[in-house]
Length: 157
Image (cartoon, rainbow, N blue to C red; front, side, top):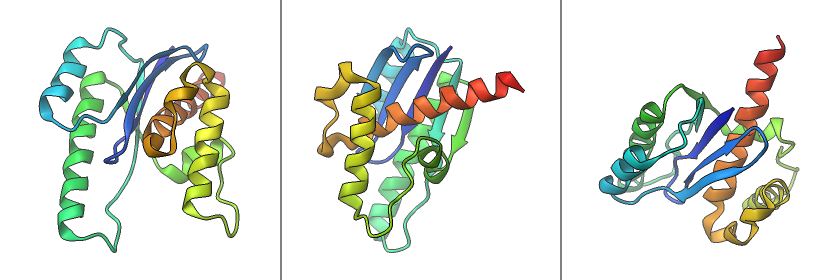
């Protein structure tokens, strides 16, 4: 089975993996429309399922930031539909399933570093590309990993 995970944020990413945790693609979220088109046209790994992080605007964001975020999410939704068979998953659901529940008193940076560490452990061949400044790559890989686990659970039923 091939699964795509998408973290749609400004620093988000797209990852495509298979059931054996082979990584076929990890790419930062495109900043321009043409790169989105290129990913859709040139993607040779057709996912059986695409998991898109279900995100929403934050209450304290400026209107400009919210509008930009909304545009990025819309592009990610379009990309997901083109890749096929989309399922939305909230951050709390996929993180809990992977044991990434936030620890009381843990700051945002430490929480993100735990996500990156888990992604490096699961996908060691990508470790050098999973950095704090590119945390979306780690999260896209983890969303895809969640997707595989979720699909296996469905098959067993």
